[in-house]
Image (cartoon, rainbow, N blue to C red):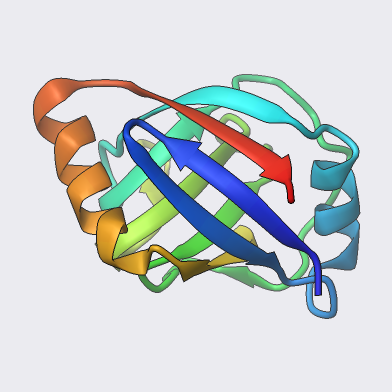
Length: 137
C-alpha cells in the first residue's frame, strides 16, 4: 500500500493510492512526484477543492471513474471536454464543469487527517487559493 503525504495550506494529510483500481493513474501521478499546485474552491461541483491544470496531460484514460467522490477522495480528470484537473472532495460533490457532468479517476483516498478536509475547503472558499503538495512518504 503506497502512501502519500499531502500538505495543503496549514494542513497535512496522509493518502493511500488506489493502485488496484486505478493502476495507470497512480503510476502516472507517482512519476510526477513531488507534485505541487494551488487548490481553489470548485465552481460547479459542490463541496470540493480543485487544482486546474489546463491542457496538462497525464497520459491516462478513464479507470475507476466517478462523478460522486466521497469526502477525502481525490480524483483526476484526464481532460477531454473540459480541462485536466485534480479534485479533492470535502462534502457533497457532483463533479461537473460548465459543459456538464464529468467523471474523474478516483486514485487517492485520505486515510489520516480527514477531519481537516472541511476546514481546508472552507479556507479555500473564504480566503482563496492555498498551496498544495503531494509527496511520497
